[in-house]
Length: 155
Image (cartoon, rainbow, N blue to C red):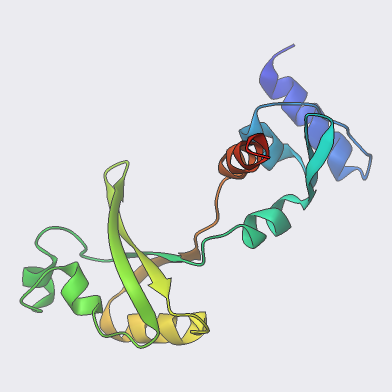
């Protein structure tokens, strides 16, 4: 039986409201297939809850933003006379901006100040650039698993 067939079967059972118990060390599978997870380390429960709830709880409170025209010549295209960060500087409620590139796509990660409203930051971004993607950065279940197990190894 192929991996895809097993995955489809599990999703069919889940969608039919049936309980499926899956034991795996492959957190990517758990993130895709599970609604709730339980992580046991050395016989102790170290993590339990909904996948999305855990990811949001362990999030690093940052925003991923991709916008039109972003690249090394962004300033020339936008007429801003500078790089992408210059057009984003001075947004109220923003503590720090970090540039990233993944799979040939450039984007920025915005770290809001404590208590800053995400909606207000988005409204200001829309005034300055054409926003293509705006999302809260959530860690993968694999990142959370590694962090949790490593933290428990030190206890």
